[in-house]
Length: 417
Image (cartoon, rainbow, N blue to C red; front, side, top):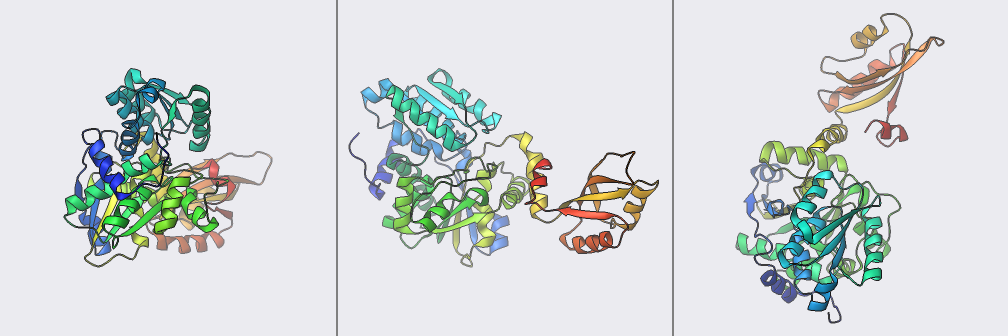
């Protein structure tokens, strides 16, 4: 390949032609729920309806389609938390290119299975490392050892140009540029691609990138004046849990200065449930990320706001944790250590004197100690509304039992969630 430079709007246009037939043109749908909640006309760009259920196939197909014969013979390598892996697998099986794909150990089983299904005999999946960044290091070592071509999940001009085709389609299908485009952010490839195209074609569109609160690597990069590696990240939003923003993506973001916001993981869970129950959309955490930020944004009344939903690779086994995180974020579920006097009838007394009419015990773990006057119990209480918490705490303070609330940021909380 020739020496690389930052992509341009022309590169995005060329990518759109190149990936035609290799990535789906996904629909733009008006969302009545979010429109009523915000006062804007909120449209969902349904990248979860791609064959691989995310926009990642766009960048992967654009890069792999530009390989020369020698690079095709050597094959490709990538690292991914799941969605990029599926995009690479889909592109490689379509183009007839061998690939080795490195997946972190926290990649949901459903995503691993889909990588194998899309890639078939063209793809070897290798699971190792606890984070995307560890998988990326293993992929880089593979490239140095074998001479294969690395297909980055976000940090490459060809990947960025491919992801930018999302913005191009939005404008074509809407018939005009939206007032606001809201995008999920992991390493920043989609954000950089859409910024690149819109800055040249429709500079009046406001672009907002949304990161998970526990992995806001791009926000930290803008504060530091360049990409930095986060010491700790929350891996729950696995499709966007990246510890370090890309060098290429940061350059684009620094040039165009979009809005950047971080959303708590619990808020993402609440939006996942709303998308499913109200809109019939099965979204993974990263897929609900952009929509979860709308209540933080100042949106134009009656204006057109486009939100990218990507991806849709959610494991049903995760829904119990999704509901739990949502309830905690909404202030409807709380945990306490209650020191019960070891006397008959104390549990009945707790139920009668402490619990309110709409409170429900969701968890109760107690071990009786024969050599102690009191025994601790872990109690989880689900409330009917946020307003019920203050009266509950007052009744606890007035009871004969010692009660210690367990805050969500307490180390003890890791044993619960």
